[in-house]
Image (cartoon, rainbow, N blue to C red):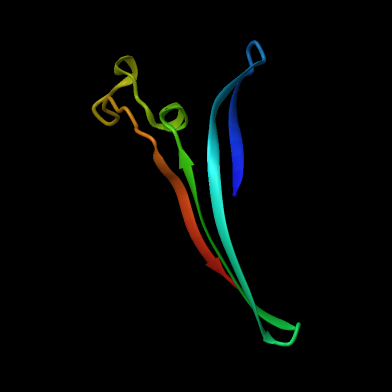
Length: 86
């Protein structure tokens, strides 16, 4: 289990703002198939984000809304998930 933090940077004034903390859980499985030369590995994980994080990327305030991009307010939840094997 890892925890990451996200910062945004205003390059005009070089202002760093922390947006949120993100818990990032991963499960790793590894099994030898033929001694140490051939192995099966699998990784599964998910990252969760709060409303500050999702809002920074996905919210559309009323003053920026258009017919193609209507007003939007996002919620917290799963930001990314994945499964990989080799």
